[in-house]
Image 1 (cartoon, rainbow, N blue to C red):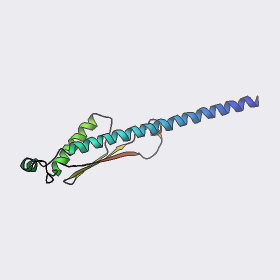
Image 2: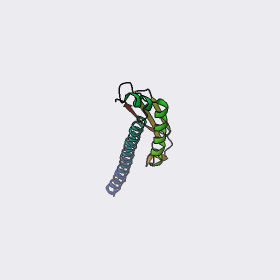
Image 3: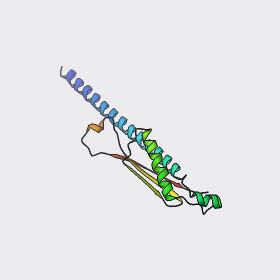
Image 4: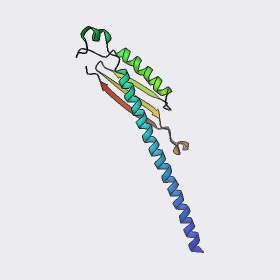
Amino acid sequence: MKDEGSIMLLGIGMIGVCLLALAVITDSAGAFIQQRELQSVADSIALAGAQGIDLDEYYRTGATQSTRLNSAQVQNIARTHAKVMAEGSEIELINLRVEPDGKSVLVTLNAPLRLTFFDALPFDPVEVSASARLDYAP
């Protein structure tokens, strides 16, 4: 009888370890997917922001090395695109930084990490971040 009880305890322990491993694997995969989705949004915002070229210069000289990005226009386009992207997905952006410098656009995003199993634990909130840089080249 002692052997039967030991095997049952071992079986219950193995089930617990398997459930914990399943929870870790599920949350790890979810974090990876959320980071990839956020990276996709950052890339999309950078591409949209790069549409904000200085149109006066472009119409005057065409697409040459002197064509620059209009910083105010890049900011406006990128923020509008970010708002549209956030409405169409489950991403809750905490921080959006758009840094145009005339020839490139740098976008940095932060969003809270949503976990399936470990969200209920009393840890500080974890953020996922992504950045994208697009260099304008005529």
